[in-house]
Length: 206
Length: 167
Ligand SMILES: [Zn+2]
Image (cartoon, rainbow over all chains, first blue to last red; front, side, top):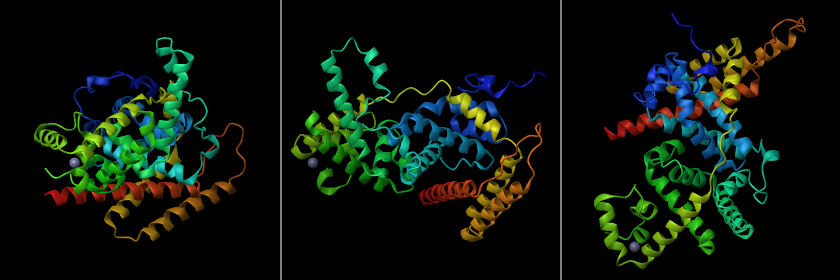
């Protein structure tokens, strides 16, 4: 019998070639049964979406990673009680939203908050990717991005979470409703109001 | 078709028109409406501009150390304390789901357990140099567990209720 690899080796390794054959819920059921490589696969698949969602919620990369770690820790710790009552991603984003909203409310990470006026940590790689933008064009782009970030940050928390799940995660309305613990029609109203605000705030940039 | 802006029905058409979410008969009917409604046409044009701007906002890449740090935290929390916490959370989760025991009583039970563990650890003499350091479950940590459990319990209930209502 082959020894089981250490956890670090499971990561990025599709043990038994299960990644393409099982959906997220089936993988989580395997995690519940003690199959840790399935957890590694779920982590590999959902790590970036979760971190990016929280990043856009709190607008701080370090805090986003810290909170995303908490999300996956909770998933791992709750594995024994997991029940496939909903899509895995709905469950995952419910936890992510809960933690992001809690952190915004309790102000625990207030000292770490970046000011939206500072150059964002993602600006450098983007400039490198662009084909030698002029300084002026780069400044205009940064200013636009700053406006977009401020406009999103100014949305009420629930509207912000709904927009981010709708726009970037492309989640269905029913999924967003379950993640936010409200009805589907409430989600549609939330989203309509949120985009209406964004349209008004960003119209001058068009 | 009723104007979504006036009726506040089918608001998703104003959000999703022109994307892969909005296809088929609904999209065709709305396209006809757009030909006669300048307010909806303007809203759609503005919506597409906003979505284009949101597309420009990229999130930074996740740190290369993210997964290693996570596994370190999982390994760190895999001792007796974590097993006890998992057992307690499993038990309390059942109480939340069954709703047979008032939430306040369950909360008191868990917070008391956390405080007792905390006090017990406080009375342990200092560790000999080679002894393994054991962490105590802090009351605020237990409160956070309860917070999470309530959230997940509500989630299960809302999903079940939703499923039943559709049957
Ligand atoms: Zn109209």
